[in-house]
Length: 81
Image (cartoon, rainbow, N blue to C red):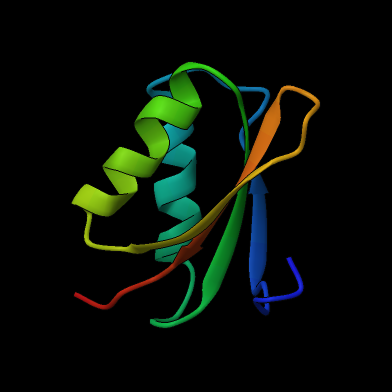
């Protein structure tokens, strides 16, 4: 994680799809272009769906980190409209 300067973090491990993406999207909208968000999410549906949806929104996936505890940290850079 030292590769990136994380500007904000959102934990979506307590919500289920499709709310996971909604919470991640809202957190991204609050950032300025170029800033980096770390999204903590559970294995399974969130790991399959959230990165794909964020890419479809035009943002840049920098890294997906397996925390080896059933959660992942998705590092995303906000890309301007």
